[in-house]
Structure formats: C-alpha cells, structure tokens
Image (cartoon, rainbow, N blue to C red; front, top):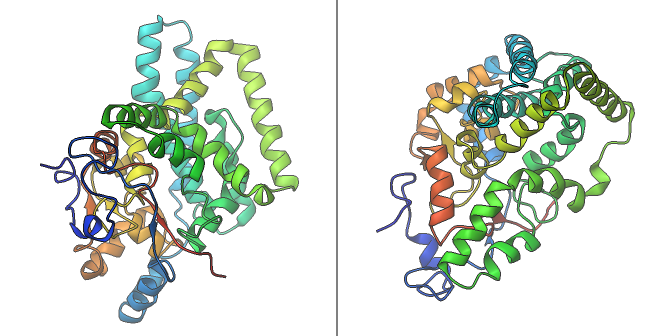
Length: 353
C-alpha cells in the first residue's frame, strides 16, 4: 500500500522514470527515496496556461486588482495577537504553550500569508501603502522580513524551479543532510521530522544564503527594521519578556509541524509523479488567504485571495482534473512517513532568462 493515496492521486510515472526509485535505495524494505531532484526542461507551466485561459475567458481580467477587505483582516489579526500576547503572559506554561500552538501560531501563519498577498500589491493600488500594511502585518511575527521577502518571492513566480534562482527549492546541502546521507527508513524519517520541526529556519535563511544580492538595500528595508525593533522593544518594556516570547514562539510553531504549515509542502513538492504545483481546496484556506488555490495563484498572481475561487469557477476544465492536495496536515504526515518523499522531491530546471 501507499500513504499517498488518501492525500494525492499518485501516478506511477515517477517510479518508471527514475530507476533509483526502486526497492532498497536506502537499504530499507520497500523504501525508495529519490536521490536527485526532478529535472525538467522548458519554462514553468503557469504562464502558458494563463495566456490560454485569458484568450478563452477574457472576463478573468475583471478579477484582477487589490482586495479592500485585506487591510481590515490584517488590522484585526494584529490587534488580536497583541491582546493575546499581553493576556497570556502570566499563564501557566502548559496553558501558555498550548494556546500559542493552537491560536498564536495559526494567526501568525495567517499573517505570513497576508504579507504574501501584499508582496503582490493586492491590498492597495499604491505600492507604498502595500509595503506599510505589510510592515503592520509583520509586527506580531517579531522579526522584520516583509521587505526582504518580496524580491525573492517575485523570483519564485518568474522562474519557478530554476536552479540557483528559485530559493523556494531546498539546497543540495539540505537534501544531502536529510536524504542522501540517511542510512535506513527510520533514520530518514527522523531526519525529516527534525527538518519539518525546524523548517522555518530554512525558509528564513536559505534565500539570503543562496542569493544574497537580492536583499534590499534601501529605505524600506531600514524602515522595516526600525518599526519592528521599536515595536518589540515597546512590547518588552511595558509587558515583559513573556509577551515577546508569545510572538516569537507563535512564529516558530507557525512554520513548524503545524496544520497550516502543510501548505509549504503541498504547493510544489512533487508527490503525484509529474505535477509541480498543487492546489488545496479545503477549509484551512479560510485562515490562509486562500493560498491553497495555488495553481490559480501562480497562473494569476495579480488576482487577490477573495477572487481566487472564482478563477476555478470560471475555468474549471483547467483545474478540476489537476492533482490536488486533500489535506495540509495529511501532507506533513505523508512527507515524514513516505520514504519516497524528501527535499529532493522538487522540480528543477536550468535557468533561462
């Protein structure tokens, strides 16, 4: 049997194409973790599909543009987190940590995705207003990153899968440590568990290590740091270290083994065998600015979160038959327990301008 069946509809093509994906690649009974990335030629698939859909459904253009509701959802979630950080600072450690994992991490993950929306200028028509709202969304996260995030994310869209350009792809060092040097199924599973638990650090540091030249060196970068440091210092000064710890632990768990963090894996890890972007249409989208509509988002990155479901409604023949992720938490479990999956389960292509 295969763990992937409940989560994805698996194709056997991957195993046929990769001779290393046979019994015993890690010396395990039935385990066959791939030891290389999925290499493809040509451009990422989203641009061509976008042009085809626009030709067939020109009304799609009416969905493009900013979403007025975003500024209100950001303001509400930031205010809630500040109140929660203050209100829980004297709780017992078990209750404090449980609340952080269940509530705080979920909200900070939502704020990650608000910053993602705003990096596409989908909160306001004005670019500066999007940056300022992004800095407000950044406050409960505790670490200034929203200005740095944007140039790397734009590269991810323009050059999805391009070697050395798309910093969303795990590095060879990460893949070597997690999969290539694993000695057996149990070893591989434990390494993936640790990697998933600490994956927020990979997402935080990998882009700057792979392409340091993309780090902004302007006034917006300085303002992001100044605003964040001032907020953090104010929080600690008036409400103590535990209020700040609430924010930082919420950020850590938001990017760790958490139900909403399953989207990091579900979006682009090759599970079905050939597809490099997957959508998820489940209820966690309500907490995540519809980022689960990921094929739709990559096809139309200038359509805001509230309108992404309409893309699929208008052009269902382009999306309904694509492989889909059925569960973000299930994807995390599958990634850890299925020996075939690991950091190498990503598409790579030679960079082309």
